[in-house]
Length: 431
Length: 101
Image 1 (cartoon, rainbow over the protein chains, first blue to last red):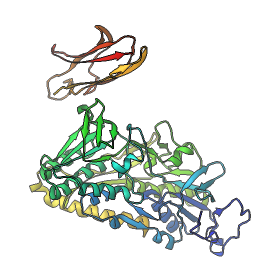
Image 2: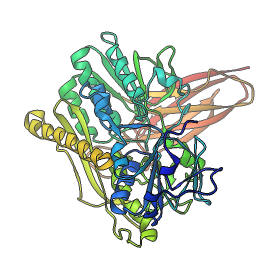
Image 3: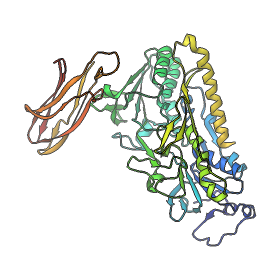
Image 4: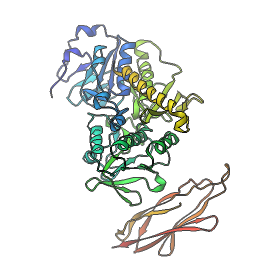
């Protein structure tokens, strides 16, 4: 395995053969401790940047397999033709410039007792505190026939990865036959980005309205309701007429099996639906590194302390982002970003002597684009309680409902707010 | 409205436990609170070759769109009837059969 970084640059890096470490000069000052961050997404990149800026004397190492980060948020805008992949791809150079040791490798195994992480490349990293922000795993074959190979035909496009899933789906939409059918399969709760599938439906419709106006979208859902449902349904009716059909579980909307070769979705009660383009968003759980480390419970997600995000199952491992259990907070990039800072402060309190937040507050806003210059949002503030997390009463809100003729300025402004949010949160991760 | 849906295997080996799924879309309005008049199913019953193999009496706590998944041992070829009876006496039904080899 080719090391793309110099061992001398990383004080926290050891290898089996290098029993004695030559400590490089730059790290001599960094004696306060070693923070290791696994996962360079909304949780991990925020954590690494925040840690380095707030605690310059702490050594911060970030492990992320991809050399650049493709965000899930705004991926739907690629489907809508409003963004290109380059617009949602971010470099880790900004974090490097701030002094974060960025290692592009995959964390394979966590030794919680020994405070070590083994990478795919074979290197072993030691840590004092670990921030684990690994994201989701997809439950392959939870929908019969939906495995990694099937996802090339029916893309999930539910993680950024190298961007190939979202561009695959976009290319298929562009090639959709005139009047063709786009099918979506949407999972039961909990899953990453609760309004995401419905923004996706909207953005696909936005594209088709111009490119293929007689096409149909069949959205098969394992649920009876969804985030911002009234707002989305208003938008669909106003902007896309009868292009979109949403089929809830009570109307046999739960897809149990797929047949990619024959382009079929098969429902719980045996209905076969032929689609020209299929987007299967499968059931999810915490990414494999969290499961393999024994941090998850029977739900497949990681129980954490609501003040510190320390995993219930292991000391000194703080799990943030979509992998943890934090309902009623959504699995959103916004929450990952907000809770990352609380987790870092809690993790480093012992080491640095600087206190954790006593009364942490977690913020969330989910913006969704429903059309051109048309966005809606839901916002809330959450706090830890003795049992878990709780939305602070009257702290947030949801976009008003009403006819577009009265609310067009509001919808347009919210689409600007959404763009500004994306700009600012990605700056807070990568700049 | 209120389409009964069932799923059962076409065939099974003798003595095999087969999974049966049922679903009916129904609002199940109790009228305990809210202005809408009461509109509730009273009972769900599944029979195999005329004999009841599963039954449930709905109460105010029953959710909308009641769904049942249950298992039946296929001892012989089975003719199944599924009946949802409304409190007003009206019934919805669906049928299916399982070959046993």
